[in-house]
Image (cartoon, rainbow, N blue to C red; front, side, top):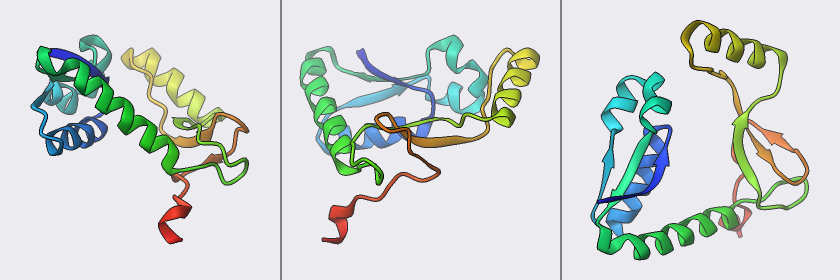
Length: 136
């Protein structure tokens, strides 16, 4: 088994693993239980690892690339129409203070609020912009 991708949360990991299983690819989520039960250990153990059989590695990497491209094409920024939207910690005094305090007292920085941000124009939204092609 080889690791093809790592995750810091079990939602993304399970969604992608489910899509690979639907495509008939055997995969396993290593360290999923540890990260789910104690998220503070995520960085220490390297997150949840999506593993596949060595002989399937190249095929899986090409499938993952297709999934990523499909996802990026599915939504666009309402401000500039770019497809470069990422989930990032919200910039603000409260969020920064919380991250610093949790890092000082628990050695793991936690930002309580995340936003979807366009990497082209900086537009921010609490929810992922909708795919307009769903309504055409």
